[in-house]
Length: 256
Image (cartoon, rainbow, N blue to C red; front, top):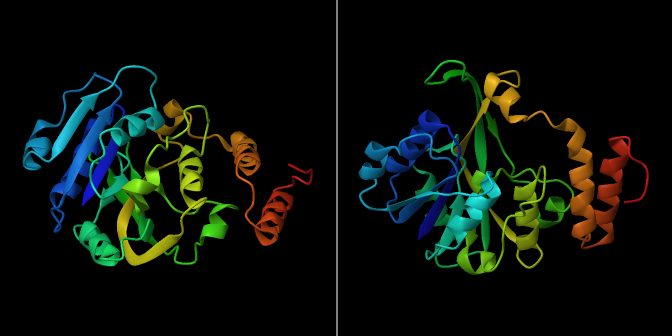
């Protein structure tokens, strides 16, 4: 039913937590592809063994980054649906079961669900929970994705034929997930699943890992948004106006 692709880079403790959340799934018709772009750490053999042979672990050479790792995983896809799970995020035990029930015999091309945000202190390991909040994105539509992407990548499940021949772009500073989703919604619509069963784990902006990885890239947000607006034409005049309104609110009045 599901192939779950997990790109990872030098976060062994967080990766183990992610895999443990998959081991705990009540729905078992899935397999996991972990693509590691670094060979500095030993693979998490205990968790991999607990998956009962339903895994592939790849140590990838070449350019680092999740886009190339996800693309490598896509080349191994042979299940009905694919999910991209970040190596620091987790699923609640009933997540895959909720998706499978929503998919049913209708087999929609793209399904997405609500999520939780767990703010945590990663200066200690395992991370210490600070705050958790529930986020509903039931109002997201295909049109709204052309304006702003509110769907975390881990909340989406893509039918295999939808992603056939597609790739995450490797030349973007930000928003490669948004680009990939836009490639899909050009031809397909979205179906919402009423379940907040994805947990997006966030560390503090000032934490060492964020400073090291350069995650504070606010100055690139506008440039990358404009890049996508130019690449993916608004499907109607309402979307075009919504884009202009958003740019104006951000202090950008020029035509893109």
